[in-house]
Each structure stands twice: as structure tokens, then as C-alpha cells.
Length: 86
Image (cartoon, rainbow, N blue to C red; front, top):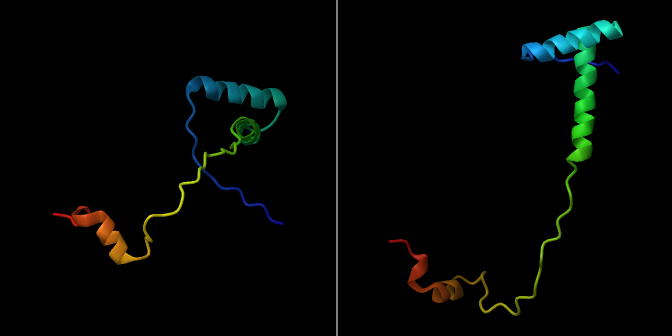
């Protein structure tokens, strides 16, 4: 499998850029490698804390429908003049 990396421009404030450069120097790695590692770690942490939770919506029995919404005549009769726009 061939991995193709995309290029982009990232804008860091001076403090963050200095910390990234310092970390790269300490680890004896390139700035690209360090940024890649930090972004992956951040993505994994974000996904762990932002998992979607299933929401149980309330449901209830509304009974038997009073009109058949597929029947245009019943709908017009039920809506009266309200369905027509002025």
C-alpha cells in the first residue's frame, strides 16, 4: 500500500511554534513528525471524549388517525381554508 501525505499550511502562534520546535529538537525528530504525532494524539483524545451517545426519544400511542393523509379530499376537508395561501 502506498501512503500519500497531503501538504497544507498550518498557522501557529509564536509560543506554540516554539514549543513544537523545542519538542522536535528534544526528540531529535523533524517538526513535521512531531506535529503529525501531536495531531494524532489530539484526534484520539477528542474522539474518546466526544463519542456520540444514543438518545432515547419518548414515544407514545396517539390512537387511531382521524383522517387518511393520503386522501387529498379528507385533507382538504380537515384543513378547510387554512391550507390555501392568500
